[in-house]
Length: 133
Image 1 (tube, rainbow, N blue to C red):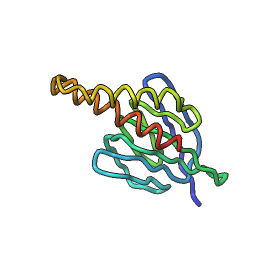
Image 2 (spheres, helix red, strand yellow):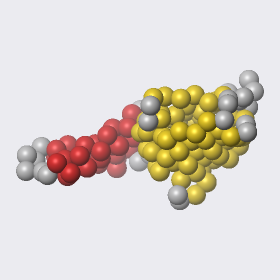
Image 3 (cartoon, rainbow, N blue to C red):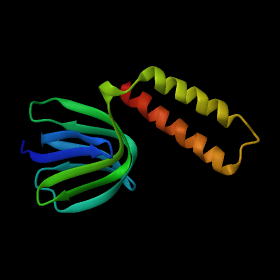
């Protein structure tokens, strides 16, 4: 399968730079797969499971939360707000975050804003746990 140059970074730094056969990410409008030869494209990323297929036949999985993806002139660049490789996810921390968010959501006196924030925390924790599998 053909490959393309891929760079994945966050505001904290570069996480991946190399050749890839495919990257699949959740965008704000649904899942998107990029392959070699994809037309120039730019989109906002949503929150979801991401996969990078490497030329050696392996696949790396990650939790991706927000950011931008662009494919310009054959090179794909991902600037994610949060990108956590499966092997880097701290499962115990994610479980504790899930439990804290669930407890917050039980509080009927939360403001609408605080409720939405707790929901977002829960969704992030559940994504991390899903990717960690």
